[in-house]
Length: 200
Image 1 (cartoon, rainbow, N blue to C red):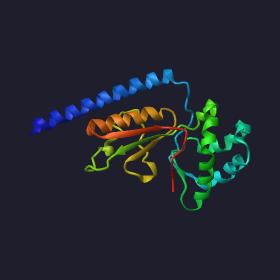
Image 2: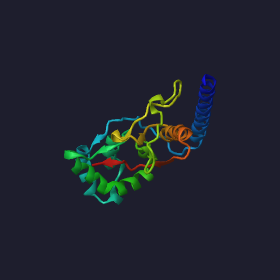
Image 3: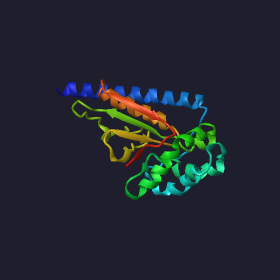
Image 4: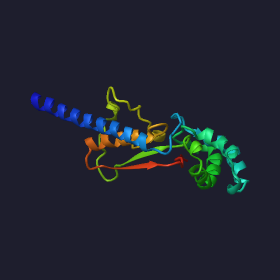
C-alpha cells in the first residue's frame, strides 16, 4: 500500500513538472511573439464603480471619433491592473456608465497599444455544472518554487479566477494545465479581453 502511494506521488510530481516545463516554454515563446506588452501591475482590489461615473460621463458626452488619449487616460489609469469592477450598491451607477461606453472604449484601445497595455485582464472559468464538485487542490497551488503568482478568485467565486499584469495569459494557461491534470475531463473557458468583468 505504501509503495503504491509513493508511486502515485511520483506520478503527480511528474505531471506537475511537465506542466511547469510547458508553461515556461510557452511564456518564452509568447514573450518573443507578443506585439502588445502588458505594462499593468495586478491589483486584486475591485475598482469601485462610482470612481468611473465622472470620467465615463465625460466621455459619453463626446463623440467617440473625437476621443484622444487625454480623454481616455483617466479611465485607463483607474482600470490599470484591476481584475474586476464593483457595480454593487452605490457603485452601480458608475459601473453602468462605463458599461454604456465600453464598446467604444475597447475600439479606442485596439488602436492605441500603449494604453491597451495597461488594461489586459484574463479570466478562467471552470465548467462544474452537472457533476460532483471536483477537488482542484488549489490549496497546494502554485507549487513550491513555481514562478506563478498566487491565485486571485474573481469576486470570491470558487470557480472563476482572474489574472492581470504581465504574463496574465501565461499564468492562466498554467492554471488550466494544473486543473486538467487533476480532473482530465473538465472543460475550462479562458477569456482574454480588454472588457472588464463587472458584478452587480
